[in-house]
Length: 357
Image 1 (cartoon, helix red, strand yellow):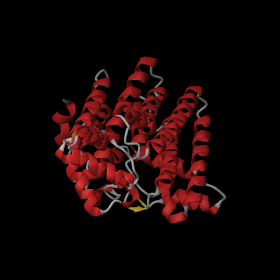
Image 2 (spheres, one colour):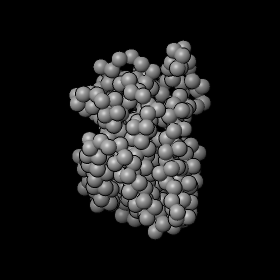
Image 3 (tube, helix red, strand yellow):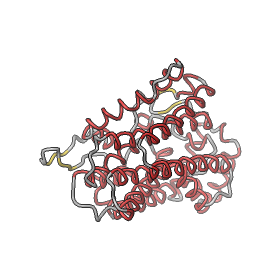
Image 4 (cartoon, helix red, strand yellow):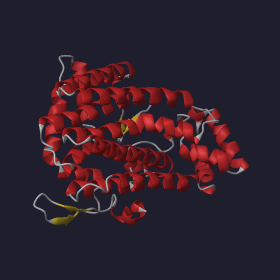
């Protein structure tokens, strides 16, 4: 499997070529997302400039929250996918079109985070208070709406109907995914199929759009656009499943949020669903008891849940599913000519399932 063969290179070290064509091995302590942003420093400088321009407003509170979000860090995987997909197909990644497309997906993603944190009552993201914890729920929701509207203004500015069609459909699916997740809270009958429908819409759809946008910027044929979109979609699925595993196995010091947040919110992620299917009777009973009152999960109960998940192999199985999706993502771009961008895209497949945050 691709992920197994390259796991040691994932977030640990990556072999890539610098702009001058020389080969370089990145420092082991620097996560892949940070190294990728460094390799695209000029593109990300233009992205930041575009985001700040897009988020400018005469309303002080809008500016304050927007600045708070933009300076909050994050992996920025979705704009990365736009840049890498475009670069792999020979497009100028510093062009206004590519930068605007990258900014649009980041604006949409950030808007969803603002709304997510309100719905989930989250207090911590990326190691610091969420916008709703800092500024209040009402302000976060309204500024999230502002970001959505700004995203559509930027995409209209590209003058491409294909971009509008793609991103309007993606935004609609993301909203549907959020509603499906809300309806699924505490539903002990949730199936793996139900779970996949949620993450396909909520997470993978914007990944998919980002891959397709890079191909659109490169004026690639429809078949190539579909391949890049499918690569990014499967990467998004792998990323989300691995994220659900990290909610139980992650390092709280690097994760940027508390362990067990999904459980406390009553979310039935894949590890929970698998345990309810194949766990011991005592393990199943424990989960049913905890999920009946998710917001009251005690530290001791969380450790018991962890033990139940590990006992039946639910976490290992979930990670294996993520690896399968990452392998399938890598296969989608096998046809691309060899390039630094392709190497980075393959590295992302390993990183998606082997990261620690």
